[in-house]
Image 1 (spheres, rainbow, N blue to C red):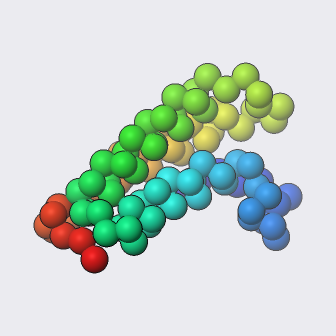
Image 2: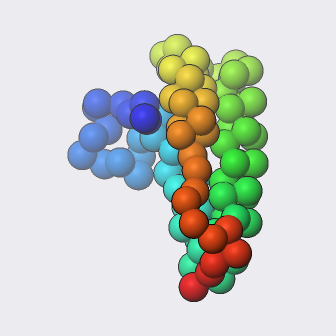
Length: 91
């Protein structure tokens, strides 16, 4: 689940609402590409989710009121994050 700004759908890199979702995906992907184990990559991603959930739960710079929806979507995604297989596997 993610929250995006429909006005920025043609330029997703400028969508501030989608930024935290891109960030957690990058943490996971870059961890795996750098050769870390899948377990460590999931652990780093979980920590990033928790950090972002905290920041969006207390965001005072929210002119459009999107922070609660972003925090909820990040929480949902964290609950769905998981791994099946060997946590010590790597590329």
